[in-house]
Structures are given as C-alpha cells and as structure tokens.
Image (cartoon, rainbow, N blue to C red; front, side, top):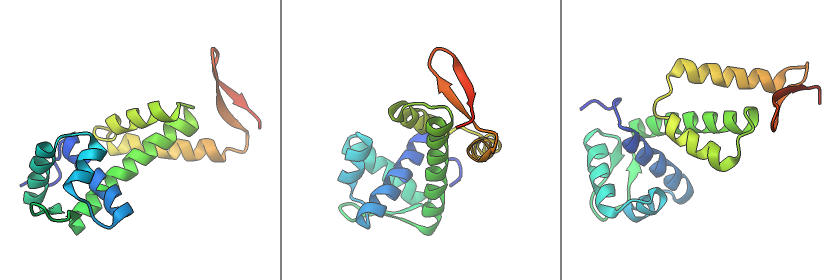
Length: 146
C-alpha cells in the first residue's frame, strides 16, 4: 500500500495522534474523536487504514501510537502546519483563528517548493535590517522601520 499518498483526512488523523501522544504518551480512539470532532466509527476506519499502511500501532480498545514511519510523516505534517500558521500570523498579520483554519486546509496541498519559499521569505522578513512590512487596515502592507 502506498504510504505517501495519504488523503487530507488521514493526514489529519496522523497529526492528531502525534499531538495527543505528545501530550499524553499515547492516544485513545476517544481522544482522536474529540480532537477531530468526528464519530467513533470514522476513527476506527481511519485507524485501520493507517495501521494497514504501517503508520500506526492499532488494536481495538488499545492505546494507539505512531510507528517510526508514522512519526516521521506526522512530524512533517506538523511542520507544514506550523510553518503556514506562523507565516499567516507573523508575516500576513492574519488573526489566530483564521490562520489556524487556513493552515489546516493548505498544509495538505502545498508543494514543498512553495512551502520552502514561504519559510525563507518569512525568515528574510524577520531578519531584514531595513525594517519590516506591517499590515495597515485599509491601506495594505506598509514598510516600517520599527
């Protein structure tokens, strides 16, 4: 089974398991259901699919954990999400809620080359000695020497 061709939904499950396991040590199906706001049968189906791909350790009514390969993929998904979220908030001055929603949607489809360019651009904007771009409502981006 092709492990690299995950749907956005399955990527969301990996990301959720990663965060839950980071907080609690391991995940339960109920934790995933609550975090993703989905029903338990959806969680079961996703876990079976991820398990068949060798990305999670799953048995009914047992704790769920990522396999080493699943953890690598989950960390990549989390990095994409966090990079996009930080770009939206710190560079584009998008509010936290909208940035979170946008990052969650875009993280699944953004080409790596585009993400790398956004990360590099954000680093440039933060370190530019000439000042920084700031958002001014009604005027757009303005250059500030602050």
